[in-house]
Length: 139
Image (tube, rainbow, N blue to C red; front, side, top):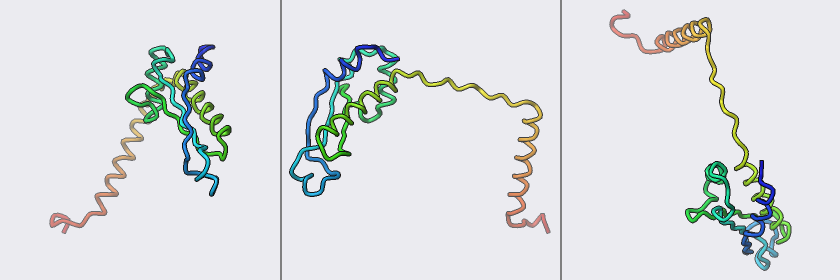
């Protein structure tokens, strides 16, 4: 669950830079800076320790060593559309950072399943052994 003011704080702290990016636009792409680079300092967001740790996992290489989250959007032909996309990506990243992953339940194999598995392994090993070249002892 996201804190109420987190998204507003993130948008307020966000620094946007427009760059002439590669992407759709043809000759227009060479003239107009439509690619958006959105940068937010994760330390200034005042995330909980769990959310900050999880943000590091979720963001991957988008989280720099200085603690900045760097999001690039260049899919659209206009600055406005790319700006909206970059902000959506930031929101999605923060939502994912606050979501607790499901804990994995251990599977437990019963005795019959264990015997069956070992029997199958043995049969597979025998099959592979029969594929090998015959030795002197086989003559």
